[in-house]
Length: 442
Image (cartoon, rainbow, N blue to C red; front, top):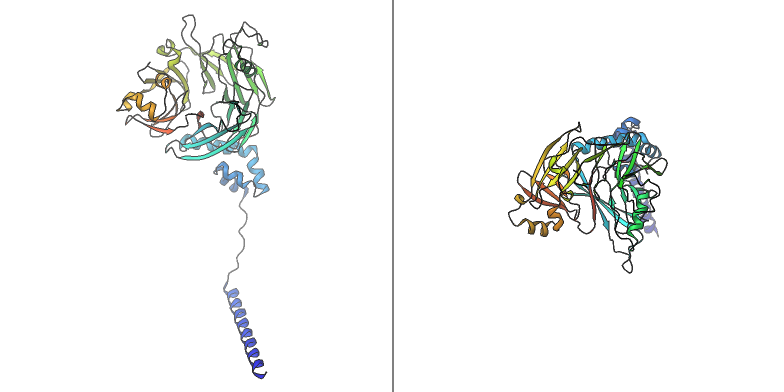
């Protein structure tokens, strides 16, 4: 017993000594440590300037960390400033292209009937390196029945619609926000024709434009009248064309009273530049092709005084128009020669200048039909009808698309070479230049 007591006493005394040593070490550390205080909060204007340089995805995450940050990021003042910086960055350095595709079009369909909803994918690429930057997949409850059309981008927004159904949406892929709009009367008329097997023929399909005017965003839909359609009782039969404009504040479509007296060429996508929209007129009765311009601010139409003579007398299937480097351009394919010339409208809108001549045959040492058909999935129509320039890189390379396959091809005019940029042949609907924005709830 005596020995056991001595062992217990010695162990307890050693523990006491170790505790004293630890307390002494902690006291010495406290004396040597300097007082550390939390830094003061950054001024609000500094925080805002930091936020303005961040991408949309990072800002969405920051909103969940602070109520103050959330109110700052969601304010319309901040959205506009962020949009201004994003536009400037897009125009100078960070050119991006968004490829919009229909995802899994046959998934969930039964008895060869289209699914009631539609999944749409938004893939963003760097224009210079062709590297894939992001992918967003959104589900649209009211589907498009595989008839998906996409407008040009406007402040990071796009309009997606169908001529087979009444579906029409405005979407911000970066924030995943979308708004379903009431159908235009043109959609109602087209859906009746396209879904009725007893109709003799399909009504011409013209595409809408999504633009921003001084008073806000607008959708503009100009189309030819069909005097044989008795359902079109909202327009006088004496009018050659009808124009519908969507008012986002009123959430309703309205008709313009003064419209062009020239039929516009069917199945064309209008070009937007310099505050105006442009369409080719339809050649009939041996008349020449002209260009109709629509001022998005005053909502008035006019014919351009001059047009390139070779285009004015051309077959419409060999010509195209687009927006390139913030300017309105028109182009013509020389028949089956694979040579395409591109002209740009001068700011005065009274003359044109030739800016590019592209010879796709010289870009291939092998048979061009084999190369384009095998490598780029270009079909017979792609080899004859013109392609559409999408964007110009800083190194003067040109990104080209086509109205049928919509595969993206990059052309290097200096080395006369072609390379595949992106290819989603079966489901691609549109490729547009793009930058992210916070604009939502318009």
